[in-house]
Length: 398
Image: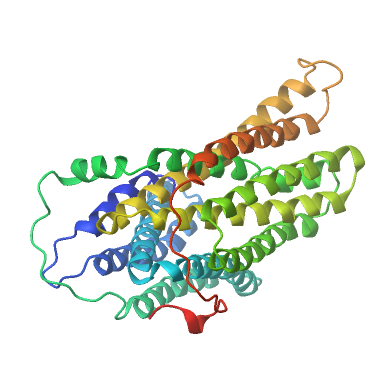
């Protein structure tokens, strides 16, 4: 998915300006993304089986197939997410967008948790045939769910001919001319970087430093997800009560500061409880930041470029998140190697040093994000509805 993350900008632009004899913009991209996902999942189990057999004459074919499978899944994921977000933005009135964003994030997270549990149950009795059945069943389910979800979601407009003169470069210049858009994109990138560097080192930290077992470290993912779900629910309520979206995001950043401090101090105190509290708070803070930034992206006043805006937001967020995971793991390995070799002195000769550097760097980045968020809070607010109905499916826009 990281290979195609920077291309989300082009995907969003394409869905804004798609020439269609049927007068559709988003649906063709959602359909093509679904086909890519289906193709990747259909190829994947056979490629993995060829790799597991490791027969010299066919192992190269397994490598090519595995690479193709992951590229297709990554491309399909980015295409469907970008066009889907743009379609949601098209359908949602301004006063309903906070609920739409919160529900989208919540369903994504619930889907990830539920599907991981289902995969675990289905593959408990593992065999090659079962692997093929499960992954190809997933491919079929992708097509069924995506076709169901996009059915009659986009109204047909007039037939669309060739794209306007100037193409992507003209639209990009128009996007960059929007007030505060550059600061917004930098804030999204830095915030995603700050919250995601811990992702790949959090479970090893719990196991190596605090002595937690496999079950306890695996439960950390669910703990962080629970914090994010709580953040999505509360952010929807706060936004419908008139909170500025950037204020919600800044609250998430502020809560991230003690969250990482809890994780750091859990090591000298040998407190698993403090560590778990930090993980929960990290999930909560990152959830508030994500919702606030997406609602801000949807609030930029340029409807005919909504796909480009959301595609650029998605490209920056996904690229920064992937880069942060790689950077966090590499930094921990590098600093730990230096510390345990004695190059950093006797005081820092400890396995906790590498982890601590990553968490401290994230705290420093969060301060930078708070500085970047300040001017965004002064942007004009989206008109707030006079009433504040409950957040639920019944209030979703039709």
